[in-house]
Image (cartoon, rainbow, N blue to C red):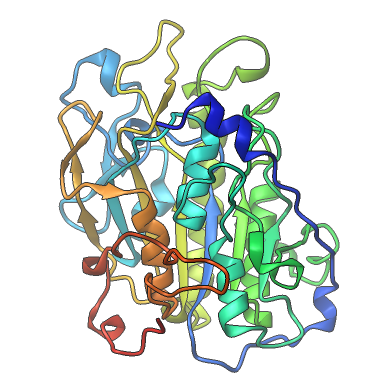
Length: 380
C-alpha cells in the first residue's frame, strides 16, 4: 500500500503538448512493426457488469445485468455489449488482473501505463513515450498521441502515468482533439463510431495509426467528477454515476465505438499490426453498496486485448465465485504494461538511460499471443 507520505512526496505531473494538423501527415505508415491503441476507460468499469458476470451469485453481488453468448462458444459477456459479442473471435479477455496498492484511480493509471508506481517524486515514462524514445517517428505524425486530452483530477493530486517523465519533452505525448480532424470523414463512418466524444476519439485514433503514429491513448473521460463515467459509486453530488448509466450510456457508447474500431482495423488489414487494449484502472466492489452502486476495488478486474498478435477467442484467468479476487492465473497490473511492450517488440528488461530499473519488473502474458509473436526479435 502507498502511504499518505508517498502521495505527498510524489507531487503532480505536468504535461506539455502541442497540436498538429493531421492533414499534413502521411496517410499510411510503411513500416510493418506493431502500433498500439490504448483505450483508457477512466473511472474503472465493474467487472461484474461488463466482462465477468456472475449469474449464480446472490443478487447483491451479481447486479442487474444478465450474460449473453458471444460468437465463441463458452465465452459470455454482459447483455449491454451486443455488438462486441459478435466479435469475440477477435479479442481476448483477461479476468484476473489485480494490484495491492492504494485503491485510488491514480495508482492503477500509473501501474498500467508505466509498469511502476511513482514514489518520492520519481516518475516513470508512459509506454508511448518509451516507444517514441526507442523507435522514433515513422512519419511526420507524432510517435505518441493522447486523444482527446489528458486525464485531469481524479481525486488525488499525483500523476496518472501519461508523461514522458525523465525521457523529456521530445517524447511527450501530443494532445489531439477530434473536432477539426474528422471533417473529411464520411458521415456514415462517423455515425458508425458514434457522435459522441469517445466514438470520435476512437475514429481519430484509427486515422493516427494510419498516418504513422506508433502509440495512441484514448482517454474515455478526463475526470470522474460531475459527469457520467465508469466510477459508479451512485453517490450524490459529483460522483452520481450508477449502473443505470452503464445500461443507458456507458456500455452502448463503448460497444459502438470499440466494435467499429475493431471492424475497421480488420477490414483495412491493420488489426494484425495494431494492438488494441481496453482497460480501466481497477474493478468494482463485488457487493453493491447501500445506494446500489459499486466502489473502488483493485482486488480483481477484467481487461480486453485484440490485434497485434493477440489470439482472439480466449479467456485468460478467472475470478472467484463472487468476482472479488483472482481464482486462477492472477495477473498483476504491471504485467499489462509488460504485455504491451512485448507486443511492440520491446523486452521488459530493457534499461533506459539514467534509470537503473528495468522498464517493467514483470513478465508479459505470453499465452495471449499466437505463434507469430513468439520470435527472438525483442529489443532489450
